[in-house]
Amino acid sequence: VRSAFNVGSLFRTADACGCAEVITTGISPHPFGSGAEKLSKSALGADRHVPSRHFSTTREAIEFLRNEKGPSWKLIGMETTERSVLYTQLKYPGNANTNPGDTPVLDEGTVLVLGNEVTGVDTEIMPILDEVVEIPMFGAKNSLNIAACAPVVLYEILRQWGVMEDSSPDE
Image (cartoon, rainbow, N blue to C red; front, side):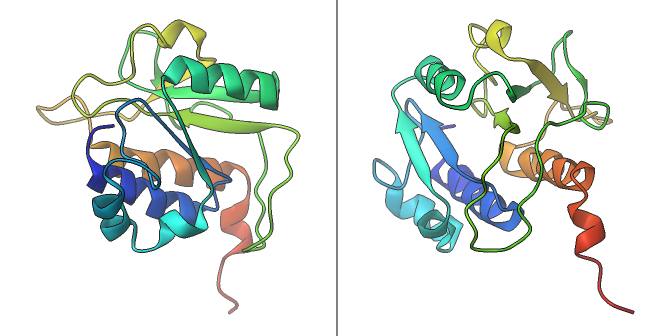
């Protein structure tokens, strides 16, 4: 991801959805590196609340996740390919920690892998992902901006995990 504003928006979404961490790679702006000031402006402080780490390459990040989290954590790419399935058709492993401020402890989980705004998820990374999902497009363009597509899939994950039932207002 090249845009610090997109990364900042992803931090806001990660905070809103209770994500355990945001991982950036390569030239992506991150809170302790290049683009931190612009990122922080669009994150509105979420970059200080959501843990993050940065890797030189996406492959390094994936190797870390595979070693650290194990096979019960699934790496899900978000990209339009022949391999992609509709994002609502996939069962996302994990569960939600619905207590704000608590550190989630999960035996299984889902990692979303997002790509560059122009070229998408690196084609060299696609074969090592567990699944690839897409959001259907009905207009002339074949994709949404990552700051728009990530929340769509994250809220679907929360819906599947049953968080939406827990957050309904009392009547």
